[in-house]
Amino acid sequence: MELNVLGQTVRHAIEHVEVFDAPAHVTLVRLRSEEISSLCPVTRQPDFSRVEIEYEPDRHCIESKSLKLYLWGFRDREVFAEALAAEIAREVMDTSSPHRVVVTLTQRPRGGIEIQAVAERTQAPADHQADPTTLTAETSSDSSKTG
Image (cartoon, rainbow, N blue to C red):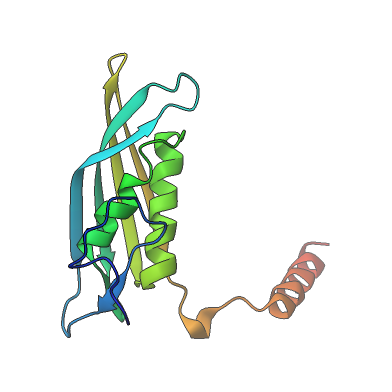
């Protein structure tokens, strides 16, 4: 696992967070930032938000400088708060594969309304992955009971 931005001068946003091996016995990690900004997709006015990322690591943890640079990439993006929370949760899940991630994005009030969006993703256990043939068979047997 190679960390490319830590210890380097980086003057641009990055597309993905970087990870490192999770230390033993770390069961929960919380990351908070007050520095996330984006643009309203309708008015293009800036939106300023707080974000809290809480995850239960499996094998990897998120490197914080790379997270800061990843979040920086939203400053010129037109995105609703709800979609932004979902996108950050997806990035954390895709890059670090935690057992669970919850992203709470709180957009500062504009027009007197504060928006808080919560996105949650969980890792499906390998032995509980859906098998399409099983689902079809269960559906068939269920429909025969009601018919």
